[in-house]
Image (tube, rainbow, N blue to C red; front, top):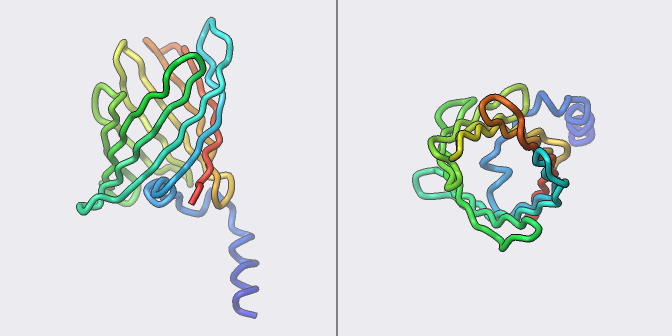
Length: 156
């Protein structure tokens, strides 16, 4: 009876009220499928296969293999470290500087700068117990030049 009551109460809690832990979600294997739209180009189907592991100091190392049509797969690495109850800092091999990650209203916002004056902003929102919606916008000089809509699924 207690288990059924607990399940009923948890089902009534909106997803936005449940804290999203990106380290827990990306630990292990994940797979992303999405569509990249770059200004003046046809949309492209994208796939990303990731493996996340914990370091002894508590950091998460995330290895991603990005599959983009017409290009060989490329590998990139993230390193995330928790800085407080609602924030992380990290690095990304594609970034020209630090990566900032903030937990805001049950979602996470990821921001970083890349080469060629590109500013990346991603919002990851849980959509189920094993799925996350990723909405990324890429700006150059303040103008949106690309965006990605992706669904990321936890594989294990």
